[in-house]
Image (cartoon, rainbow, N blue to C red):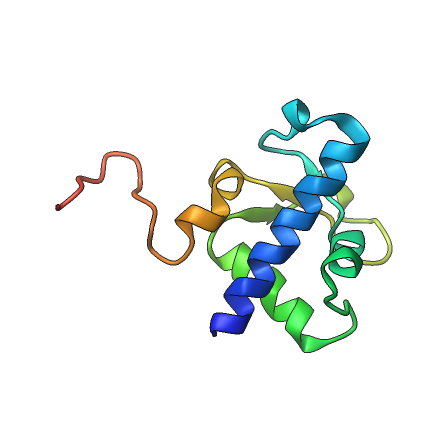
Amino acid sequence: MEQTIEDARALIRAAKELHAERHGAHTFVPGTYLPFLEAAKRSGIRSDRQRYHNAIEDLEYDGAIEWDPSARYARGDKHYLITRRGLDYPSRARGGALREGQAKLF
């Protein structure tokens, strides 16, 4: 479980770096396409292994990424977009986030 979370963080971090190199960091906003295959190569995670798929599944579950419905007919790997929650993913993973309107207890 801990390895999956670390892998998910590494994929998001690498995808942000790739995007910043190509388009500038200021354009990394909700709805931005994430190049996860390239991010996996950069972070040393093989995209043909279960470890990669577990990390992507974890990001989806946490709401950090969402499948791009406009790419439903695209071939190859699924196309994912970053969500608002995903912009702060490393600090908000696994219950660290409050939902809108949810009170903070302590």
